[in-house]
Picture (cartoon, rainbow, N blue to C red):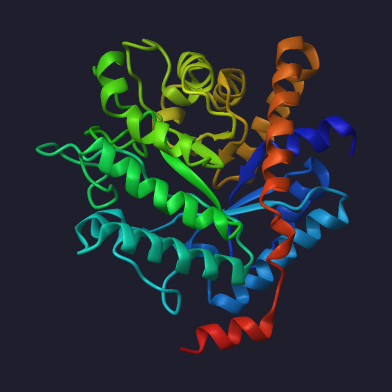
Length: 349
């Protein structure tokens, strides 16, 4: 495995099919240096199995001379919670906002979730949701947001970010620049929102600015077109959004992670090869592909060919690689190692 492959592998995060480290995923690590993983319900049987799986992923990367991987999961609580009982169940962002003391409930969610993720070896949570709820619409994000008030969303999201990260779990604010008002689910097709940039700056971008102030480790992109900013490309593929606004104007220096490139919003309108290259050049640091090995390989080979031939592409690779390695170092992700006795003791409740 040459240095270019090792570097590129750090810029991908992939899903895989089952509760064990399968041979195809091992091949992706060994041949392509894939260095980050996302877990779904299909990967989880129980806490001890999950901890062993995370350890296997780490050992597979170690054996290949790679940095320890980011191992992420969507554990928002409420409608989106990959970890079921005996993991602690929460009502999600909407429930937190409705609690008698929302700030205290946000802290409780962050503290307990971080403790449990650390126990099983995950080091990144794709939370909190920083989208705004938009009443009187067919809400794709219903139940997943803290509400419609940008300041409240920013404050509660900031508490979750700080709580997760003080315990070594990387937080991810999503979905930039906001999908709370979309009527078309990006899992199915590509939404278009006519909100002008001036309005986005007053509302949708406010919680993300608060997340940046809280030093959030990562921000996940939205597969949504806002024609006022970019008439042709969704935010995930848009340099206008990810570099000009998020990096330069808002001052974010952490990881930018794409939402899944296999979602209908992308696949129905762009080839995988096109979206992989466009996302990198737009400013994405980690390309997320959640399901099919063949698509992971195609995207990887496309980006490899592109950066080999394009000077600006190689510069983008180096920028993103440094961000990925810095985030891994910052959160000391080596500390949440496998402890069978502690797992059994905690989850016997």
